[in-house]
Amino acid sequence: MGIDVRINNNVLDLGQAEVKSFRRELNMKEGHLTRTVAAKLPSGEEVSIHSQRLLSIVDSATGVIRYSLKATNFSGEITLRPYVDFDVKNEDSNYDEKFWDEVGKEVNGGEGYVTAEVRKTFFHVTSGMKFRVLKNGEEIKVDAATEERNKYIANTFTVKVSEGDEITIEKFGVNLSSEYHPKKGLQTRAKELLNAVYAKGFDRMLKEQIDAWAVKWETSDIIIEGDVSAQQGIRFNIFQLNQTYTGEDERLNIGPKGFTGEKYGGSTYWDTEAYCVPFYLATAPQDVSRNLLLYRHKHLQKAIENAEKLGFKNGAALYPMVTMNGEECHNEWEITFEEIHRNGAIAFAIYDYIRYTGDQDYLAPYGFEVLLGISRFWAQRVNWSEAKQKYVMLGVTGPNEYENNVNNNFHTNRMAQWTLRYTLELLIS
Image (tube, rainbow, N blue to C red; front, side, top):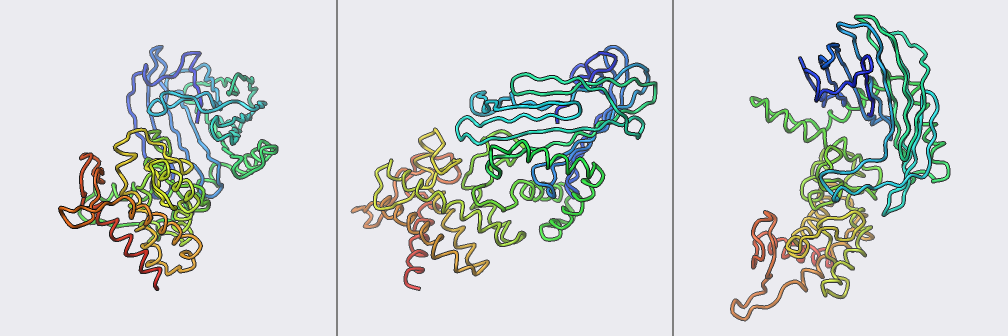
């Protein structure tokens, strides 16, 4: 999204300007975000801003922003600097760490690319931009100066304006990963995709986005009458679920905040099985939910290793509370070791999927192996109480996450009991 703006060489910064009006609107029905602003700079220039952007669900890995500035009360120059910047850090997680090391970059007049490597998992991502400029609705040529530094490229250009003129930049972007394309040709492929959406143009990309979202809403909308806030709230949740996960890749899962917040760092939680799988079962093609369950099967060996670290044996599996690759990534012991109800949520999601879809073919090679590992864990996690003459489960934290070291938490005990019975039923059926 990065576009720096100067008005007569004065930085446009809404934090320093007098903001006369501001509106930001997420169109959940059509899948785009619009912002309109009227602002006065400390130097006196007044400017009207209108921006609209989208992340395409038609052309995967691409997006576009149309950013317009109108000279409300001045003549002079507007300078724009569209850029790509990998030199970022998260403020709300990972202790302000940076995640990327530069692999390569290229910048020319009107476009540029940066390729970087993720430090821990070592896959590559190429981010590219390409833009066009319009003045009062007509495309113009600009003489853009190029700039590059570590993990950063930019173009800078200046356009002369008279009072009432409007300058628009349409910036097309691509983020392409070596998880789907060979590292060697990643930048070449990024250029191909970027050129394709650039040739389409903003208006066609927006039309295709609107049409694609209309299809999604046909199967996933929920109507609440008489409560506007509740109606907006449920549609916001549906929008987030549909834009966050589309189900094409069983290696991927759902972060609790999707892509809208950096808290939790995109990790996988038990929220997926408890809350998200039922939604996708009812609204999306069957493969979407199936791939979420295949994700857990792919991590079964890691779940067994997680249990082994705690002394469990014979293939007992403890799925992580927080993970990227199947390993436990949480660092609080009362959550990591005691919030074991996540095993139950995964088992119940398998049951939910089977009863909803009837996909018995999923059970034999995948689902049953997961259920067996979880059941072996439950069988070893309980111990016999002579006083109660019953099996008990001691030292757990229930799903409300507030009471730690609880003995015989009802939810956890019930899910353990249910999982064992369901697994036995499958064995004899």
